[in-house]
Length: 180
Image 1: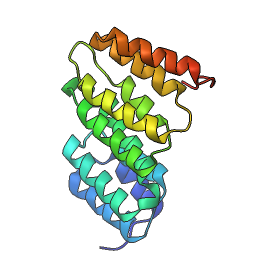
Image 2 (image 1 turned 90 degrees about the vertical axis):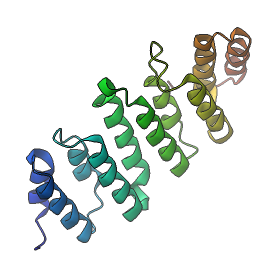
Image 3 (image 1 turned 180 degrees about the vertical axis):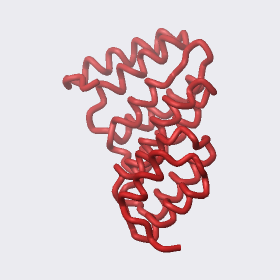
């Protein structure tokens, strides 16, 4: 197969509903070493792709271009949180936030964004998983105030007022400005 132009790749990612055409465009982009996250964001939002297909593309992209893996994982988390939330795919969103955090553990966004996808009515993703993920973040992120506030809220939702108060106090004692 001849390499497609960057514009042809973008066009297929944006509007094709044929998986084979999208896959060919993806392979062409990879073979050309196209590592522009913006191009792949178009692919991730193609509504003709299902969750498994999006994961296939995203995982391959992160593996082949590790220097953009953080951005890829954050976008995949957003896609699963927003597009597939009706299918209760918040656990998959959390999995991608965890992968993003593994790439850049000192970034607060994956930890904080993961909290935003919590559905308390369905307990998806499980609140215990979110709490554990945020505790990992406390060890890695230099500015902990926002994470402590989120932990306090999660413990409150879980009915553990002692730990909720502990993290509220810890947040206030940090002396930091709250970023989120």
